Image (cartoon, rainbow, N blue to C red; front, side, top):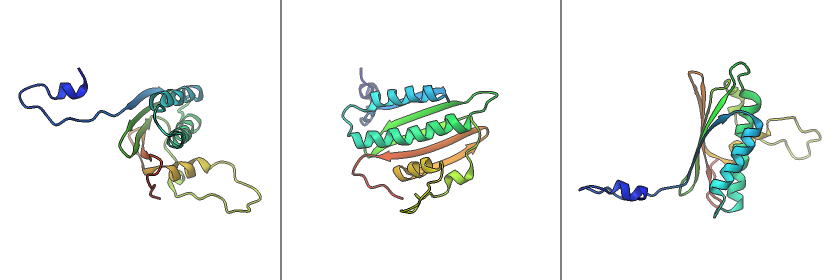
Length: 162
């Protein structure tokens, strides 16, 4: 029995809900586990998805998850990441939480790439530019000892709001 069949059982059937592919994982904030998770995300969503959208989703998730693994890990207790992705009509809705250290406020400031002709590029900081550029509805907050980050990655051809 499919989910839509189950919801319509009984004397008063409800309107049909569409089911969308989802991905949920709780994992250690370690680079090797992040890589494995990204491979699993491609396996879950890659079929029938254009390469541009899949590439943007992977790039944003790789930047966010690797930032947690590299910068937010609580050395004494370890850090776990909770990741949920839902494929929607216009793109992917993503929610990431972790119990690592707080995200520095400067990460949330709007970013720009260096001006053309710059002779030396600064080290770091491009990840948050990419995250901000490739997502919509990016929001972050910290509650108790947990970071919450949510955003959407639109399908190719869906205009991104900056």
